Length: 207
Image (cartoon, rainbow, N blue to C red):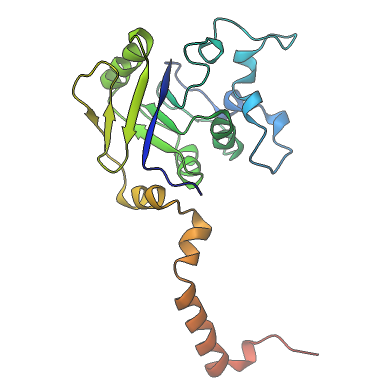
């Protein structure tokens, strides 16, 4: 998994509330087990009309935010079903950080396990950042995970955020569940060697 240290990029304001995972990536795209190729279908019903043409009023279709790496959004983002394809679609589009007042629990954990940083801030601060993303001459923000700071395009004081220390460690070091397991491979090997000696009857039969 790619480590997350500092992210510098355009932030797109999208202050919708209760954005569910079917809005993020519709169910018909869940047949794939590949993590790539889903970005084109991100927010499909909002980005495209019935003929598949881009809706010019949707934020991610506008030139200013088309290449956004940060999404500033409303309460309860990622509610609905538990599909892991939702963070896959955001990542494939290029978004590695989402800022909101609150997130659905399963989506929140899925996102971190896929290398995304989700930042929870009070609603007033989220609205302030969205306003700056909308009005700043250059809507480029910098997210410093080590310092736990959001540096703003206005040059005003950075906004600090809290994060679980374990999730921070995993992001900084690019560790998903497999990576965390591999950090303990020596202990696993020692346990298996000891078990073979002390409990040989658990070993598979060899024909």
